Each structure stands twice: as C-alpha cells, then as structure tokens.
Length: 333
Image (cartoon, rainbow, N blue to C red):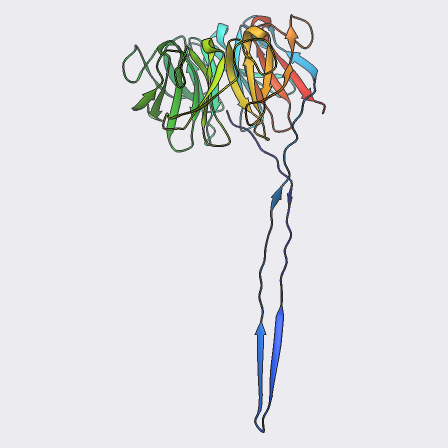
C-alpha cells in the first residue's frame, strides 16, 4: 500500500571557527596566520515522531448499493493514488471506482476487463496493480484507467494463481502476490516472470491458511494477513519467517478473519478485522492500540470490513463490504 509521509524537520547547524594567529618576533617579521576554519556543519535532522492516535470519530461515508455512478457492490480493497484520489476495488461490479477523498464520484474503469477485484496497490511510477481474484491474474492500469499489462494463469503450479487477493511491490521490480487458495505467497518480476514462492498450508510458524492481505512495512519486511489462522505473519522479502502477531478472538489485539492491511506514518498497522466487524490497530511492535467501528449498518458501523487505507493526515478509509460503501474515520487524540 503507498503512504504519503509528512514529517517536521528541525535542523541545527553549528560552525566552529578557530583562528590562531602565530606571531614570531624575529627580525624577520614572520607572521604565520594559521586560520583553522573548522566548518563542522553538524546538521542534526530530528524527525518528530508521528502521533499514535487511540481515539477516532466517524466522519462520513459514501457510496450506495448498485452499479451506477456513485454506487458500489461489495467493495473490497482501497488505495490512495498519486493524484490524491481514492481508488476502490468494486468487486461485485467488476471494476475499479475513483473518488475524491471527500467522497465525490470521479470515474470508473476496468469494466469488461476485471472479473472480481480484491485489492489494489500503486507503485512508485503511479501504476495501479489490481489483484483480480475472480480470474486468477494481475492487471496493471495507469491512474486514468488505461490497461497496461495483464498476466497470470489458474492453477497450483509455480507461477500459477488460485484466487489472488492482494499484491505488494518492493520498488526493486518484485511483485508479491497473496495466492489465497494455494496458501502461499508467490514472487514475480513485474512482467509476470515467476521467481519463487514461500509458505505451505498449516498453522505453524511461517505456514499459511488462505493469506489475503499483504503489505510491505516501513522496516522493509512483508506483513501477511494469515486469514483463517487469525493472525499476521511477518517475513523477510526472501520468504524467511520472522514472527507472528495477534491471535484468534475478539479481545484487544485479537483478530477474526483479517484481510487488507495498511501502515500509517508512525508505523502502526491497521487490519481489516472482518468477522469482528472492526478495524484493529496494532503498534509498530504488534501490540494492541485501539479499534475502529462497531457491527451494524448505522453511522460508524461496519458489516464485513474488507479493505483499509490510511492517509497521511491520519484519516482511515474502510471498504465496508456488506454495507456497499466506504466509511471514513478521523483521528481525535
């Protein structure tokens, strides 16, 4: 997922000037002026830590049930684009919809090309990568909606996909795909060339059961929503297992059917905690921070939240799947 980070920088520059004129009282007036100008410019750039918000208020929602302009059908993942607009995987309508962050409809694209968009990801060049779980393939569009590439085959072999749910990109030409029904993460070059895979079905460390969300963290590691195991698993980009976060349940920091993941500017992780009908926020070390939303169809309520995106100002956007809308929460403190 791509996050726009805002930081306040304070710089302190110090220069020390030592001038030591050595005067020799010789008949030769030898004036050696040793001017040692030590220009030690120590620029200490301190980045003020991003606040860790624990209280959020519901702000508004947008979208209604249907297939027309301004409507959604089972929205899944969502992502902010380089323009600042929000892009939503409108799964039930087989398209991607584009909105302003205030919730005004802009456009849709992918009709006739996308079968069932699950999650989205922008890369550093402004291209939108779509995990088309209904067709077991990856599609690439520009921000205006023009198709640039499409690749992927159905199956369980190397490089084949079965219900791909999400993609992550490392900026070095590698694409990581959450291969949902094959219980693994597959790694490709950007042109679809298979590189390697990791993960097998199971409940042990490094094993997966229907992985859906995948996100590259600020530490350069891969965070995977291990959906049926109700946990987050952390891997190095070469597939080496690092650690597990969360456990199954409805308590603080627990998960029930996690899906899309998103990081904020401070490194906190937001999880679309679907069957708990909430967004669960975890700290940069995996500890419970807070939750957003309650079950239902009213304001601030969620019904099977699948997608989550966090803007640079801390606003949280939720793909509220069964309510056919996007809900927006704002940080308070």
